[in-house]
Image (tube, rainbow, N blue to C red; front, side):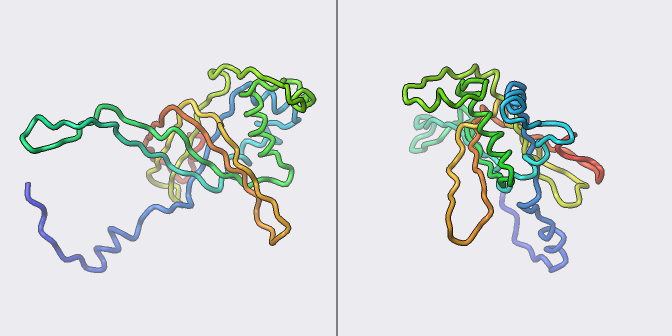
Length: 219
C-alpha cells in the first residue's frame, strides 16, 4: 500500500485537529490500602482512613506527580526465514514493574505516617506500634503474606470539563516498595514532598466516558 500524498492544511483545519490536546496536569489518583493497614493506622496513629475526618481524599488529591506506565515486548531474532533478512518476533509482553508517585506532605504529617504504616505492616513490624524493639541492632522481622498487603491502585487521566473520554489505569497487586528521602534545608523554603515507589504485577487500561457530574475516582 503506497504512502498518502502530502497535502496542504489551512489554519482552521490545524486548529480543529491539533488545538484540543490532552494536558498533563489533569488527573486523579485513587489508592486503596489493605484492610489491615487501615486498622493499623487507626490503632497505632489514631488516623482514620475513611469518614468525615478520614485522610483518603487528602492522600489522593495530594499526588502532585504521577507517571503513566509503559510496556514493551520481549523478542527473539529470526534469521532463517528469508535469505539475508533478520526479523524480530514478539513472544511476551513486558510491563514496567514500578510506578512513582509524589505527594505533598501535610502539616500534620499524616501522609508520611500513612505510608510508613503500610510499609511497617509489610515488614512485619509489631502491630502494637512499639518502636523499642526496632531500636535494637539485633532486631529481625518476618514479612507478612503478599495477599495481605497488595491492593489495586488507580490513575485516571481526564480533561478539565469532565465531559468526555478518560483513561483509567488499574495497577494490579500494587504496594509501596520505597519511600525516597526528603531533603530539608535552612535555605529558601519549598513545599515538602514524599516520593513513593509502587511495585505492581501489570496494568489494565480502560477507556471510559464521564459526564459533568461524574467523579472518575468513584465510577
